[in-house]
Length: 228
Image (tube, rainbow, N blue to C red; front, side, top):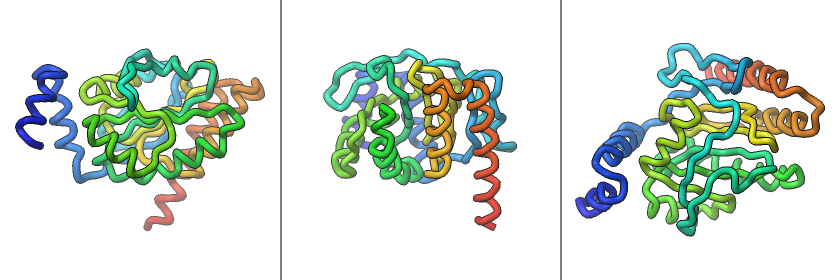
């Protein structure tokens, strides 16, 4: 990072905020976050994998309110997409598993367009890096961008800063599940099917949350066996 860039960041976010963001990025560059299992919001919350450093504090039951700028610099909140099921993905350009998720996220947005699904990427990174990377990758879903305020947005979900993580919410803005770590296609398919059932009133929210937690533990165990 150039001295000019560091000074510009301080000017925008303040010394304390810049220090927090830079320390987080320095810690995260070059290593993948520890993977943890899915966490369902509310009383059916599933515990994170044993031994991981990012156990949840208190995940809200509905999407929290925060404001970040989009690619055009327009301030937006998640309420901009109210009335639609959402997949909110926290990522950064320097995070390898985050980069691996992007093609899946673009595919999910197309495959579930009939359900009204919107994917919103929240980049916890330097704005110019995000814009350049997004253009190169052809990211077609909305992006919100923040540095320290991006970390604050992640904290609003009750999680320690670890990337990537994905939040699934129904049409009413209720959090159905949070997947910490790299999202896989089979996990996304199961979660989105439960979100669709919740939206159609075919399944109670707390039952969907428990089904998701159970299924993702099963899928994680299966992947662990295959990796041995």
